[in-house]
Image 1 (tube, rainbow, N blue to C red):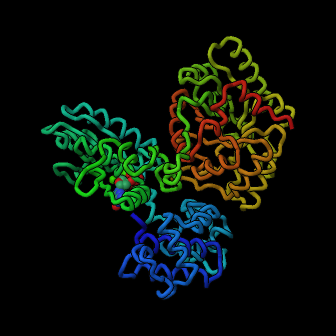
Image 2: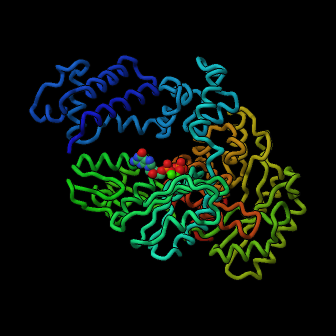
Image 3: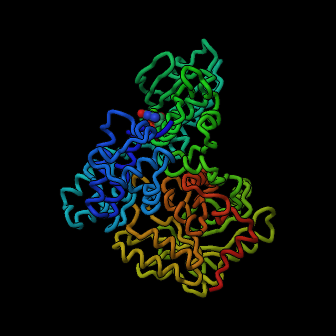
Length: 574
Ligand code: DGT
Ligand code: CA
Ligand code: CA
């Protein structure tokens, strides 16, 4: 089925938005807005008129150029102009338009003047008082933005992924053990591995007569039953986390899983494709007329609309659908691809376990190498290492490597990047190590220019290997420091440095969009646990989720390389 008027209007609106963010000629922007309105209000379908070769330029606001664009959309399902605008602007920018009070003009200022691309960056810019400095914004606007974002994302009521995982992973086996229950899957943002989760959405299939709801509402952790019906129920757990449960017929399991995994905007985009093919998708299946043609598995749903299977982490309507249509989906990183961990602490500083204990735990997680990267002396609260204590640790590592089978320890440090961009330990000390992680643990409030210069200077250091937790944010606790991340990524590439994706669930830092950017710039990312105890290697799976959300493949990941290749890569001979 060809594009409907509403689709064409939506394309023109998006073009107008993007042109306005880019600061294009106001007449040109107006032309697209007018055309969107005209098309949206037509009483007959434009594609039918085009079929009959009717002249579209007779409608107000539709000139020759726009009439050609309409034909292009109808015949190709695409608009080349929109496609090229989408490549010029970061995809997240249009999300800013959804924040109440932000129109394209303001988004343009935020993007051009402050490099604000995401709602999170918007929030931290407002918190840091940077928005009031822009012409036409002022303190009141800044406050409004802060409130709008807070209302919009409600950070307090969202749960960190790892916290939600604890509840999900206890509830799942409880439900699976209920007689008659067949499948139990946690869908929603949890399955998409979002950094934070609003509520849990559980999909269940069960034999008729199984007392699913009774068991669900009787679960120990339930504090309040919000609602319960024959096929759906919602409860509040004692911790405040809401859980929605739906029982679906087996033949609808895939369709329900797809629907309730989301994201909403991914679902809408898939449904539009179905509509154009004369199909209907809902949570029960894919239908042609009244006939169900798919829905038992998610694969069957995607197949019905000629898309290859899209992994949940990619379902954010950020380019995964065109990629699935043309067979260009990334082959996402798997947990088993990780060969080592390049950020590990021990009891020499603020870790809880000894070198040997960490080595054995790493090995039992299937890792072949660990970089021991304790803190440097500047971080006194963590009893950071001075050159003497570091030298002693290096001797211990040598001794352990002699005796340990199945895992190799690398000598490293998480060295403080000082305010002026110098490193907290002398060159001759760093030169003896296998790798040097640079990190910011102080002076978070420097201006964007100074913070960026600080890190660039540190990265120019001949022994610098990798920037640890690049943005410094701690979820729900500390906003990222103000830094020109695209520039850091580019310059890391030039200098032969790497970026960490810190897998600690409070950090998950690099952000997904910057993982994607690093991939495009050819900068390898290292997914590290930052483990301070033996059980924190478990956190690698959250880093993996974030990496997958950032479209990373095995070849984009530094610690997916075997030790010999890794050694060659981290050996900077500048
Ligand atoms: P959350 O809970 O805020 O972290 O995010 P989600 O994505 O888990 O959202 P939630 O729990 O509101 O809904 C679960 C999924 O259900 C969502 O990802 C997509 C689907 N869904 C919910 N509402 C709609 C809707 O109005 N239209 C469509 N197409 N799908 C929806
Ligand atoms: Ca949810
Ligand atoms: Ca929900």
